[in-house]
Image (cartoon, rainbow, N blue to C red; front, side, top):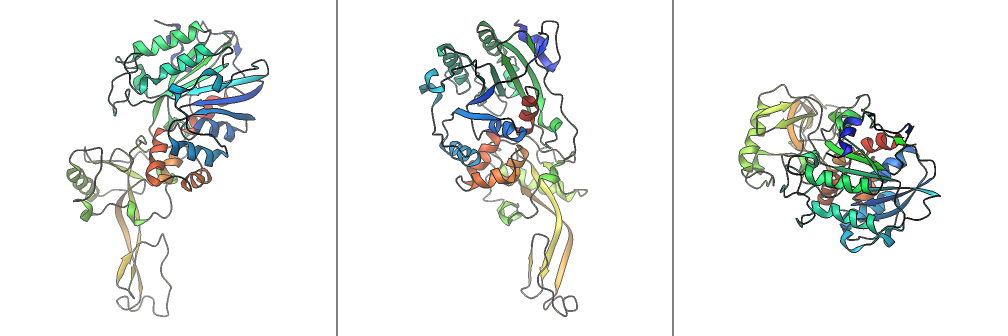
Length: 398
């Protein structure tokens, strides 16, 4: 078994070097499978001087969002059609290169097809081996590589190919260390465990993965104060609602409401409609590329609803009542303002909330929202990496 096994969990081993791994030169970032640029965002948040040097991302909408968020002008590119010359790793005596590769998890994750990532399999997850080709073509190698993927990269079905990948990197002179890290341990209220592997060229160095930080935020802290009605689930939608990730959406929908009827629900709770349970941990389930379904957090919201006596309607006003008159409460039926308290409702996460749960600030989301549809913003969040976890990984390098 490869020496990489000694690096599980972020603890030093007897085989590690004596010098902590630190980057002291100008940094150039290369993001393969770049998505919306979580790695770039992490370095930006840390205040590390770096150059957004190259990216490779085939999804045009993701590149549009990347450019909007980071102020760049990249174009979509297919990793099977680029070469080392396109990445242009040079002058490594002057620059420290960080190359990241969060290759597709489509054929690895339990939610996917589980067809694996072998070289000959022809799967999307097998695009990992395009990174092998690019590294083999390079005359100078990046000093640091960072991989991110689902924990199933280490499963019985995939570990042979994973260790084959590790052995290849070792043949180039890289030392590998990997660990499973969960976003909920880094003050992001989302249960999102991922495998991260850092590889570096100098075997005199050692690296220890961060163990997390103090938890202060709960899911309710990430929610928008006012959410349009379209995100709320209504009984009359049973016939038309397509949850996408379940075969019998009507049954799941009814179960969700039955769960809420049981009471004892608070704002920020989530619903496990399948098992008829309310999750009160304050932690969101893993954000996926299809947040419109029950796979993603269904929020239980407890908020006042305003009765408009003038128009005879009940509506949500984002915490505001209508204009108060001289008899605002005397004749509720005619023109008073009534408040229905403790109304429990169920809704989906909004795209902005999904981006918040991936560590992106609202300004970044707003920039992306100007060039990308809501459905694609959902997908981009589900495909991304949690920025706060990346920040702590990178923090150890500077």
